[in-house]
Length: 194
Length: 194
DNA sequence: CGAAAAAAGTCAACATGGCTGACATAAATG
DNA sequence: CATTTATGTCAGCCATGTTGACTTTTTTCG
Image (tube, rainbow over the protein chains, first blue to last red):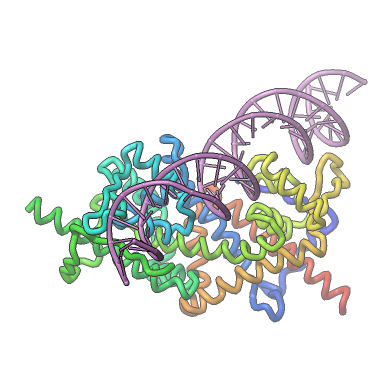
């Protein structure tokens, strides 16, 4: 971001030696201006990592999100995905169709309930999903290393606390369940390989 | 997010008591799956706060971003804004025109360089910008409180470290400069009030 | 001075990914 | 059997990003 030159016409460089570090927005509580902006820039960079990969295969962020959550929850239903992503069936339908057509996802009728379409990644889809996780994990690992040894747990708690309280339970369960199934999968790999 | 019911058809509830907490993605380094997802959900909630306000006045996120940065850098040029937002002149042009037309921003030719349009918020614009800051700051303050006493500095460092190294300098300067000018403004208020 | 560059704006066309509303079909459920 | 659920689809709209081409005004520099 080529050093911005905000011209301070009238308000000339009056460097009055800064008495209080932050004048504060009165009764409202301290304004978190720096964090608001850092979060904006950090998140932009965070999503730009997958964006570069996506460009090469003319997919967009919507495809990334779908691929990611299907990867994490193999066999999930379309409804589950809608619930996580909070978009409409029609919006999801578009990207899901493309992902299926191009062989990243396959969608099979449920065994017990044949109305359901259970979503799984193909090997091709799994490879791509893992690329996304790898590149974003790299950025996160680097950031945590630069933030000190115990930062991971604190950052995790901070992020959870940024989520609406009424959603936290469901989201933490969602993550825990995904971790469980991926563990089950690697156990299966161990069993079949060993 | 009404508790998602990921059906685990084949892979039945084999709760094998989880030996290692995270099986890890081999040579790639530990995958940060939980943080990737938490960041997604946290950021979505974070931007949903202003979204609600924006809906009432039929503006979008693009308007919010413009308003915010003009608020923080009064007198900035259009070019500066383009550089921060990293969008095209045409995209910016649309929302900027609406913001000016509806009396949130005013745009005056520069005194020294009359090609420039220096952007300032009107009182109406400043009120709205402060609403956005207030609501997002509230969420951040709450999250930091829940994360322990020293979390603010650590979170700040983490967010900086999440930004591409080559951009960090410019962004930190940008934030510092904005803090300076807002301080200068509150000094001015003190002088004129006292 | 005059040419080139910079700052801003504009027109037209297009892509992505949200949205609403209206339906259709198959399958499960009571 | 009537209803509900899960999924999908058509058509159209909106917000916000993109490219490319071009204009006007003003500054800068050889």
